[in-house]
Length: 203
Image (cartoon, rainbow, N blue to C red):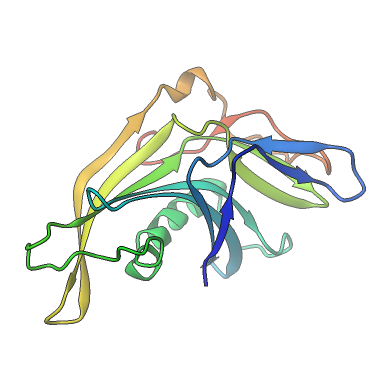
């Protein structure tokens, strides 16, 4: 069952026993938390979801992620984890539950359901009691976006998807996060500066 977190102010994450407060841009819509198994390690993934029933469009922005067990080692880089998050988000079992509208039928009578899958390029990470959290630096720019159209085939009972627009970038991320991810994680109670992770828009 999805967990909805409605944010109207900056999310404040406070390290236990520490006075450090970390802030991230607020999600202007609904924050939905999903749990994915990636390479044998379990991750919490925060999605900022904008449901627009008037044009059958749903905008899904990856907002942050963290590994639940910091000692779990799947041998994947942060870029590889992010790529896998994108793949797992763009599945029928995830997308169909994000909004109450569901998918349009594949007979074309009502058009398609369009999903904007947006992957941030600029990130920062912070350390709370040894757990490393990744969050976006900017809420409205520096995303790599793909548009997919989905429908439900009432005859076969299957969901169908098709890439409607290949990956494109909004914003000039090079001006805001020109450095790669630091090799050393921040110490407990500290956070990094903004850095970029590679996506299909900046491979």
